[in-house]
View 1 (cartoon, one colour):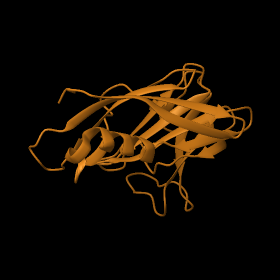
View 2 (view 1 turned 135 degrees about the vertical axis):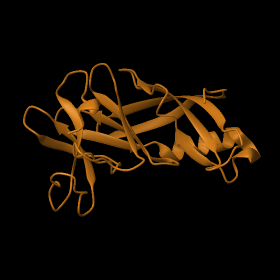
View 3 (view 1 turned 45 degrees about the vertical axis):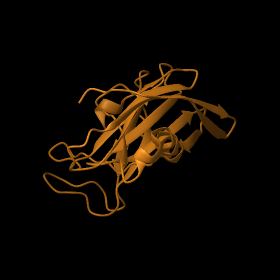
Length: 187
């Protein structure tokens, strides 16, 4: 379990597992890593996440960050996993009574950012800024900052502030970009 991903209710969090079990000591995991949403009181796995982050206490995934942006009522969470250069996973998870509805937001957001950048997007990599707040309210309003940039380049990144609306209805979810604005973001 990742302590920094615990929900405001204290009853849910992100965790990880592999088919071959967890490593001991300073060992790296063997086999594919799977991130999961767990219910803390009983350890039940409620759903699978899109990320593959891991941390054993002594070691962690190299050049990867995992963010859990929870709604205040702990009924929804946005998962962000960044590798060294790009956002690998950007997913919404709505938690119902006994079920989890997930929606991949990465393609929607990357297309919107690329479109807003016009021709300047060509060849640039998409990344959610993990050092700036990713916020999700109880009504499904999501806000965050993202960039398009050239890795290993001195050329300035293109910054954006985004707002999305994510709704869950029964066993499905849908999202739309409400606002996208070019923004000067801190370095």
